[in-house]
Amino acid sequence: MSDATRPQPVPQSGEPGTVAVTVENRKATAPPTYRADMAGAPPKLRVKDLCITYIDRLGQSTEAVRDVSFDIEDKPGAGEVVVFLGPSGCGKSTILKAVAGLLTPTTGEILIDGKPIADPGRDRGMVFQAYTSFGWLTVRDNVEYGLRLHGVSTAERHRLSDRYLASVGLSDFADRFPKDLSGGMKQRVAIARTLINEPRLVLMDEPFGALDPQTRWGMQGLLLDVSRTADNTILFVTHDVSEAVYLADTIYVLSARPARILHRVDVPFFANRDIALKSSADFRAVEKRLLDLLYTPATAAT
Amino acid sequence: MARRSSPLFELRNPLPRTTSLLLGLVMPAVVLGAWCVASYGRLAPPDFLPSPSEVVRGTLQLFIDYDLASAILVSTQRIGVAFLLAAAVALPLGVLMGAFEPINRLFEPIMAPLRYMPISAFIPLLILWFGIYESQKIAFLFLGVFVYLLPVVVTAIRAVPDELVQTGLTLGASRLQVIRTILLPAAMPEIFDSFRVMNAISWTYVILAEAINPGHGLGYMVELAYKHQKASWSFAGLLVIGGIGLLTDLLIRMVSGVMFRWREKPA
Image (cartoon, rainbow over all chains, first blue to last red; front, side, top):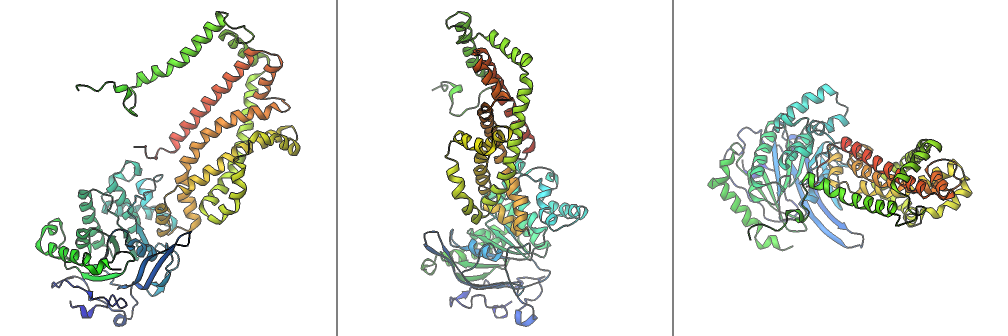
């Protein structure tokens, strides 16, 4: 699949843009890439000229995001993981929160299926680095939280929560309270609780950042499993290069604050992601390329 | 070095159960012993310091001849009513103040100075406004509890992590649903904890309130002891109030333990 068929992701920045890792069979089972003008359907997510500047109480302004534009096409039936990779504190979480509707862009547009977003909503579920299990609810009630708000019947809720609890391996803990769970399990609760709502977009803000490496690998595998079996588009923020390469179909490399998109990298490992992949030469090559991109002088200059 | 000197005095080290129990008995035993020596040994005149047996007799006297039990009941009821009223106002107001900044800005300027005013200085005003009967006592207790409870609620609501609120919003909760299903339950343990302090405050204030036109209640008993110049009754009153305080405190802790079983144990 050549880049010419893909929508140009960075129309505004004038940066070199796409550094594709060309490997055949990028998506053996994926349907052809849709283009907005081709399919007639608007992109699932369009972020256009997004700028976000914080102004604190003293009137001091901090520019967090500058001129970020990208599209995520709607590809029904195919899960996709788009990763934002950038240095800590660069403003990548700010982009995610803007997409969630949790903060208002200073300028620019965010459209879901062609419609501008307003308030936060269940179509954009978010998973945070901090543990967000509702401590007063059992694991099952945590997972069913969104369904309950939505007025889904008890029987239907149970059927769905059974399925999602199983998919994150927490069936045996359904009736426990979060205080009995490890950090990784709490994040699994958060993931199941978000996915059960079947959001258009799953926004993940360094969700595995607080976990130890082994748990982290396990969680990455789990995320790949659940994202491939369901029709989920995941927007994932991390500063961990290896995590980005392992999870992503597409990586946007961001600059230091204010965050700008420096490069887009298409990652070729769709079908065969297992833990062995991480030590393969191909994987290492992509990692190295990303590290080079992250630490070129262009990145440092703002 | 073979062994560290004393495991008992490790920094912040929990004690073995029996050691802890025994240590807890030391000071009460010392005080009781000193009391016995001073009173039975005639080191202090009996009018100043009644002996333990005198105090027990005084307590029984109060219970039998002066109906101490119903006095306790009356005081408990006053505290209960005042507390419910205070909670009925402070909870919703505090939740709204904690959740919505404009509401906080609106009320904070009148609530903040109130906290620094000595509550007993309100008594003359309350007598003026509410008279000297039941409503004045309730109003006084209400004020005492309310002034303390409101900032606790506001702080507890504010202490709920942003991420929980944001998670709720992105799971489809409306603002009011976030308040009801996230802010309130997350803040509840802390608010409930404050009930213990308020319980202690209430038992102090109730004596103050009942000292005005003492018709009935524990304050009346204390007043009675003063009129009759009976130190043994004063002691009896103090012990009874202390005992009730401990019991209610235990009750609150037990209820809290059951209600908030889900709470993370401090590491």
